[in-house]
Length: 330
Ligand SMILES: Cc1cc2nc3c(=O)[nH]c(=O)nc-3n(C[C@H](O)[C@H](O)[C@H](O)COP(=O)(O)O)c2cc1C
Image (cartoon, protein in one colour):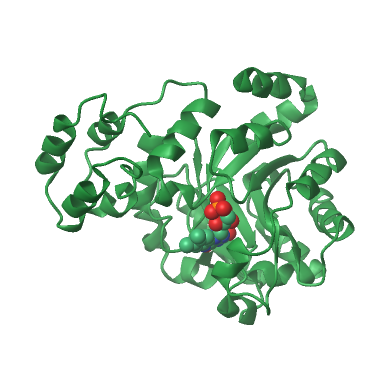
């Protein structure tokens, strides 16, 4: 029933929105950019666990992109959306040319990071306060990429700028220059009050504000981010939005993420063992599959195998010993 609801909602979106969605290559699920997590090895895991999801790289500062492009080109597949951070339009343009030359076709600007270092650099969530500069940054991306290849990730507000009017105005300026895809973390960023971890947890989620933006900009594709953990969360948000973006669930409970993914894409979920068999993990993947047995009795045994860097054949022996009955998610 939940799925019918979702499909009905998608069918009732206007043809116009559908065409834009196709142009923008929107997928129902995106995997959030997460510093320290969203690496090429994570991408390899996530392409097995959720083949149709869009994978975002962790944020790269524009100088790092220009100075060490091979660090990016060597680890990600060309389907990855490369997230950038920075506030100098000329350097952003150079970084985008580098990204394009490496064969990537989608870039995302980070207007959501609240870290003190990023604030000091004058980018991330701080840039939501500097509307004119924020627009210049996106224009410099558009000098290199087509509008449908550029997306914006932002918060619903920042510090004292906590209103629908502020967010609408922020989106409007990018709408005017052709940006078609927004990813909105449905929490305000309190830059001086909270540290980055607190800024991901303490400000309350405000999905209705994002839904009001969806109504205000019917031709823009909106991806909702923040706090999505269950199939019910996903179904409820997808009855309003074009897509969802999922972050911490991917490393906190990888199998729950897979079940959510399979439900949204109306596919039969694979067992944990089938996923591991498909991936054929090597040590570089272990961090990302650590939580796959979360909630079942083998979790600590599995984590020990990974911690001790056991080989693939030992992992396979472990998974072979699990019966299908054992591996049902509880
Ligand atoms: C460890 C960690 C690192 C993050 N790094 C980034 C980043 O590089 N760029 C970004 O836009 N957001 C970053 N975020 C925020 C996530 O993309 C996402 O907006 C946030 O975690 C909320 O989604 P969730 O509740 O599904 O985790 C990070 C989050 C975490 C937990």
